[in-house]
Each structure stands twice: as structure tokens, then as C-alpha cells.
Image (cartoon, rainbow, N blue to C red):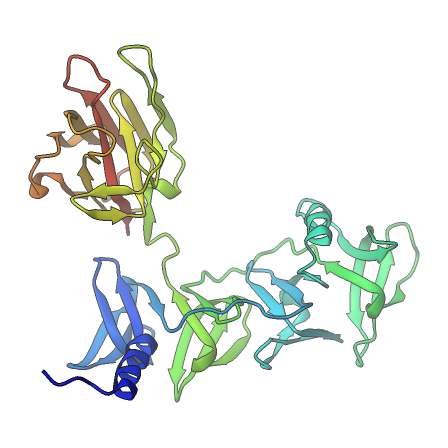
Length: 394
């Protein structure tokens, strides 16, 4: 067998590492290079040809790993759709905000799209106090001043900034007129925006620095992604700056990321064992037949979990099983109800065939999902089950 030279191996690994990866609702993965994004599909060039995936079925596209923010000081800009930008610099001029990202890209956004501006956002002590003072609920604009290491808040109305970005107009509650405030002396601005964007996003665009924008439409051409934001602005991002396109928005939701609407936990011997999220009942990663699962639910006998699905999902999927490190003698009866209709009922043991443990249930228009675990042993000490990768999808 011929061995590849080290440089060739490096090229192969670099090529594999740089490949774009698209994941769909049905668990499929397409690897290659994104060449086109339209209103209806995403096309990826693979080794065997172009593969087009319907946009409605795409969960995410991973382009390259994020590296995080790498600045000694940075400014956080939160937009009205809750998108967050970590900025190297921000200039507020007239009715416009110029945000310079760590990559050097300058975004020009309307002032009306900004919900808050926080200087020195990496300062943990100041950020803790900032979060307290900037929380929503007060129907006034707020101006935050840092004095002697303490943040002080002034409430009133914020106006326009000057053309050079040196001052911003502010009328304090109880005052008769606006006065210019020097922006260099301001730690943060909070705008009361009672009306959120009417447009519903289809995608969260994340760059390598962790910046995020919500898009109602995407257009991809010549290595540039144009993001049509929820507030009407268009932002052009170079491909090399992008990390991830997240289309999930509830299309796929793990049950362990939801809080049950109702939980019943009992015991036949007076020893109640609480259900666990994303681990087995001993707190270790869920493990079936040598394969580890990072998401799932683990339940002891006499446990009932009820979820309010609200008719938003179409399928329930996952894999039931016994993590034998917790106990190998389990005989748990698992029953799944959808709006009172029994859709699944089987005894799960370490020897139950995979076909009987694989869950794929139609939950279209289902309002209430209930998972019931009962004991089959005389004592319920041993009876338990894990529901790995338990998820509902649209």
C-alpha cells in the first residue's frame, strides 16, 4: 500500500475540514460547498454532483468553526429583533448607526433598529449591573453613565445624534427641552421599542466572531451572502466571515429542551427518582450498545411527562433503551399518548430489538403529548428507561 506524502495528507484534511455541512429535518447530511441559496432551496456542490435541499427541510448549514470575540474591549449592539452584534467600534450619527465588526466589516443600520448599545461589554462586573438596569419593562428610553465605577441610569427620551457622532439629544423626565449629551461619556443607551419587527425570520446568520443577524430572506452570489433583516436593512457578508446558518426556529425541538407542562413522579416503595435531561439516571451520558447520546430523557418507573405541543409539530422521533450501567434488569412499560390516543406501548428491556425501540410517531395537530413509564418487576427498583434523541419536528 502506498503512503500519501505528509503534504498530501494535510491537503486532504484541510479540504475535509473546510467542507460545508447541511443537515435536514429527516436526519440527512449533505457535505460539500454551498453554491446557491434561493427562496426555495439550498444547493451544495458535492463530489457526486449538485444536491438541492428544500429550504423548509433545512435545519442548519455549518460553514466553518467560530472563533469567538477576540478583543480586549468591545461594544454590544442589540437590535430590535434580539440579534446581537459584538463590535470593535460603533458610531451613532444622525438617524444611523455604523457598527464596525471585528472582521473590519462596517454595517450601516437605521437607529430605529437598535434596542440597546453597551460599551465595554466584556466587563463582567459592569455587565451584571447593566443587565439589571437595561431589562425591559420600563416604557422609557434610558441613558447609562459610568461614574466612579458605578452605573447610573437616567430615564427620558433619546433623540437624534449629530452628524459627526459626538453627541446625542436627550430629554430627561421632568425636563422641558432636549440637551446634547457627549457620547464618549455614555456607557450605554437603551431604547424603548414597543413595536417589534412584523417580519418573521427564517434564518439566524452567525459569523465567526459570534455576531448574529436574523434574516427574512437570503441571497447568495459570488461568495457573498446578502441578509435581508427583519427591520428592512440589507447586510452583505463575505463567505469567509460566516460560521453557521441556523434555520431551526422550532422546526426540530428536543424534548429535553422543553419544560413539561405536567410531571408525575411516584414510587411503589417510597423512593422517588426524578427524571433527568440529557444524561442517564446516574448523571452520566446516555449509552446504548456502546453508542453515546448527548440529548434525551431518562425516567424511572412511575414517571409521567406531559408536553404541550400546541399542534405545532408533525413527528416524534427517538430511540428508547436501557442504559445497563444504571441497571441491567429493567423491564419498563413505556406508553406514549397523543391527546388521549395511545400511539405506542411496549416493554423495554436491554434485549428489546431496535425496531421495537425506534420511535417514529405522527403527532400532526397533537396538542398534548404524554409519556408514561410503568414498572413490570415486583419491585420498581430496577425499572427505568432512557429516550435518546427524543425530538419533535415540524
